[in-house]
Amino acid sequence: MFKINQQSFGLDISEKFLRIIRLEKKKNNLILKSFGKTEVPINIIEKGEIKNPKKLANVIKKALREVNGERIKTKYVTLSIPEEKSFLDVLKVPILDEKEIEKTIQFEIENYIPLEIEQVYFDFQKIKAEKNQKKYQEVLIAAAPKKVVDPYLQTLKRAGLKPLALEVECLSTARALIKKGVEVDPLLIIDIGEDKTSFIIFFEGSLRFTSTIPISSQTLTRAISKNLKIELEEAEDIKSKEGLVGKKQIFDAMIPCLTDLTEQIKSHLAYYRSHSRENKKSKKLEKILICGSGAKLKGLVNFLSSNLKIEVEIGNPWVNILEEEVKEVPKLPFKKSLGYTTALGLALKEYYD
Image (cartoon, rainbow, N blue to C red; front, side):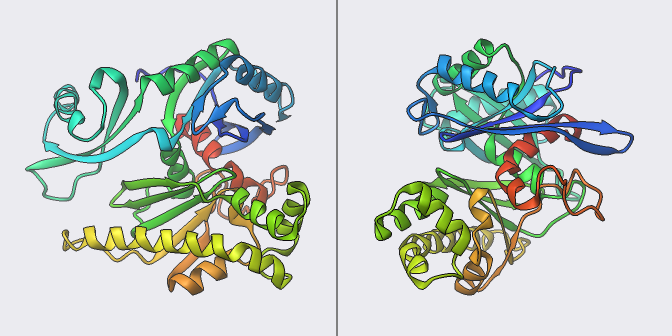
């Protein structure tokens, strides 16, 4: 993608909500200038695919009018595209220049995705090579079907916006949570959203594996609603108040879903361990970061840590934005900001890359 010297804002769209973040650089610091969250009516987006671009464009316009903080004047946007409709993989290619790498990927990509190259948009990013590695280099490739991406582009046009970049959600999430320039041990990032949960395995400076499951924050709310025979709105309030440390009947209502989530996490940890054995230099994965709107559930960190026998922490989506001594932005409290993790990562892109 060519670089456009324009300010932009991050726009994260899911089936239930869209979130907006705009940052601005002041001297050596980044400042939160605008943020907002707007509900997306049902049937506009289904399983990551836009069914009604016109209605979604109107939702975006409404969100921009109602944004908190400064009014957003720029028309340029960095937009998330759904992970469950995208393909990411790491390829090993000979040491080549950018143009030759692109040609190699064009030749190889159909071996990794179930679509012909004419049916997808794709891009790649070189991964930092190991010291003294002269035989090959690794590249992270991302691809998304044109039939999925084009309605997002149509929606932006209807909303009067211009795409600065489109990015798979998990890349933005990792950018927000992992300190730039700092080498980290292998991590499993778990993004617990309103309509899905994403797993991201990150090590050796890059994403290595991603997947998505339908268990979500709303899954827990529906379980409480069904067991207590109450409306979803009331169940959401009870979940927020009680979490996993309150009344036993609330915990019991959620435990089947949480057990399922725990088993899914174990399978992803097993996947990493089995693949890391092939590479004797790979380190043990000893930490999990959780984020997303579901990460603020009371008692969740202790529950997961106890059941998985591994360190679990709530990720900090401000780690590349705020100075270390500043804990949170008063306008957007930390717990609330967990749901904005992907949007913060999108807004960071123009300052980060």
